[in-house]
Amino acid sequence: MRRKFILIPCILLTLAFQEGTNSREEFFRSSQIDYMQGEEFKNNGITGKGIRIAILDGGFPGANTHPALNHLFKRNQVVATWNFVKNNPDVYTGVGHGTSVLACVAGILDGKLLGLAPDAEFLLALTEQKGEPLSEELNWARAVDWAIDQGANIIQSSLGYTHQRYFTQDLDGKHSVSAKAAARAAKKGILIINSIGNEGRSRWQTLATPADADSIISVGAIDPVTGLVAGFSSVGPTADNRLKPNVCASGTVLTLTPAGGTRIVEGTSFSAPLITGFAACTWQMNPGLNAQEIMHLVEKSGHLYPYYDYVHGYGIPQASKILRPLAEYKKLNLNLSVDPSNFTIRIPRDELNKKSILPHPYLYYHISNHSGVLLRYGVYLLDGGNPVIISKTGFSKGDILRCSLNGESFTWQENE
Image (cartoon, rainbow, N blue to C red; front, top):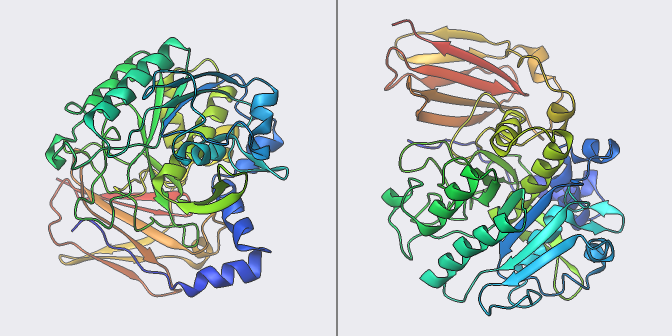
């Protein structure tokens, strides 16, 4: 069994709008920033300055005229563009997906952030073709090489390929055209950030390539109402059992339309650029680190770290953990009893009352083997004094139980 989650009633969505915000749009706009503690970066003057980001997408119509992106063009922060479909520099055409993605990295709407890196530099590449033929994936690989030549620090991609050309067993980071290109860029010191895909409700369900590539950040999506994985978000791990996604962010966002307006959209296409902005801020703060060190720093800033699972990864990156790194991660205080059939977990009241970025107290758990491959994982909504009972079915000596609550973790391993 891969997943076990507590479902939160949809009525909470209405309550969130009534209690916490003036509008539906403001709820999602603030969620996409607040879950990452993004205002902490802004208040400390961390805005992605000095970081060059390449965005590979299906087109950026209206991006050069939208008021919420005007600062990028006024200050010449878009330093190069290329249309790999028509072989010319015009990227302000095609589908509006890229415009929405760019906004989730650098948009400023009525003085409020849509993304965390409004002062970064940008390279815009149009690679997508109708029907997703092989030539589109080849365009993606060519755009990666172009971005490297243009001095990119980060390559942001919200594109992915699945059943059109691959089987799930091919998603091991070594088979697809795009995964090979991503791995090549990683070896050259580029940080690749890619959405994991939106196949969570489909028969495919698992991640899309190039999210399977090694040494890149693959991003899942949470539902901003519950703080848990969004149902559409694809599931890891890779075919060779590497952790994916690495981290996650809000998958329902307020972003921009090519016509100059705004819209609410959902998908890992938009959680990934939110993480791209976060990574740019992290790199601005740590200019002496290389891409892989930034990747690991982003992972360690996840609200669940060192816990992980195959839908949340290490969780939602937290600006506070970048600004004020912890010497060590706090141990979760819980009472665990173990019998031949079950783990019984009781949570002290003071643990339940601790401040959290999430709207509800959740206990995450996973059971892994000695190699770190997950055998089972899930999330419980804590409802007060009732214990959490987790079956020991399939648990063997050497396996590990790990729990996470409010950013603190607990690990138990049966003696050999």
